[in-house]
Amino acid sequence: MRAPLVLGMRVSAVVIMGAVLADCASAPPRASGTGPRYPEYSPPVIPAALKVAGDVRARHEASWDQLQAGDVRGAGRAYADLLKAAPGFYPAETGLGYVALADRQYRTAVTRFRTALGRDNRYVPAWRGLVDAELGADNHDEAIAALERLLALDATRETDGERLELLRLGQVQRLMVQAAGRVKAGRLEEADGLLTRALGLAPSSPSVLVALVDVEVQRGDLDEAEAHARRAVAADAADAGAHGALASVFEARGRHRDAAAALARAAAIDPAWRARAEAARTRAEADSGPAELRDLEAAPTVTRGQLAALIAARLETVVTRSPRRVLQVATDVRGHWAADAVLQVTQAGLMDVYPNHTFQPAGLVRRGDLAAVVAGLVTIASSGRTDQLARWQGARPGFTDLASGHLSYRAAALAVTAGAMAAEGGRFQPTRPATGAEVLAAIRRVEAVAGGR
Image (cartoon, rainbow, N blue to C red; front, side):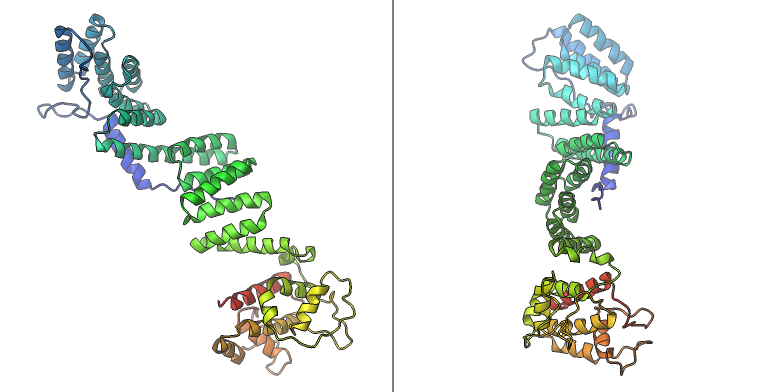
């Protein structure tokens, strides 16, 4: 199961960002008589180190006043004439950038501001104008880079830092949405590139890292995927998705025990991961045990040898707590793959050797047989909790196909009451062969009881 491609960004933040950017990048002229039309524009002051003639300075100031009075076209002509008279006078080039910005000619504004910065890369008014121009031209990466440079030159405005964070948030959101579309279309390389850009803007974002892991796992880039998944966990150990992403990498590598452990951590944080965690645990246990126990979940029947091996492998503490019995010799298990397990469970009294000294490891486990084994396991697993065990043992559920006087009734009643087995429609069906899923469910419940749950 792939880790979901989550965005992890609040829509409200994006809405706020849109409003802020619209206000900054394309603010409409204000009504006349209320002061400057564009007070948010940074005046293109003449740097002290830039020596200019008095008439150039006067014309420059007059052109800016003309723009702030709302005469955009007149200001544009005035600045253009000034540049003809004083080529290379970059404050006037910056003024033309603001003229283009006021006229919503964003690409022209970008060109003007960048031309000015080509003459003085530390000119703050041009950097401020460039941020708005790039945003107006929908060049978000360039706007962010311009604002970063601006903050490096002038960090006096607290709002600039706040605006930068908002811009980054919005761009990460856009990139992740675009990446999700590429994933859906099967264009994984493009999605990888988009998410890598997003990660550059938000290096510690678990959401971006998890999304990138998902793409990398699909592409087979497992080394990079594992590195990014571990970064996500390190960034926020309380993020269930980060642990889930790491589990996806482990699953792709065939490391099922590690995957199960990662998913167990995810489930402990968010119950929505429990089903996947349980499936991973079952897979890990099956892979680590004998081959004969693999794929038991889907098995229509279970043999006595498999049940013995399952108990020995999964319920070691319960087997150890069981009182030892006189060794019963089973003559038909020598050389059998589950011989050691059979010895453990019979000596613990959890399963019996038949009177003819055979264990019959290939014999099928029926539901009545399973109930008898489960009743013994639950009794031992409940040691120390006598009140709970007494309630279970005293319960008398009704079965439509199993009378209370039947030899298997007490064991069936205890198994059902303890939650280890089920009676569908009131029928226990003691003679029906137990399925692998039923046996595994019973073993899991005994594990829970042994763990105090």
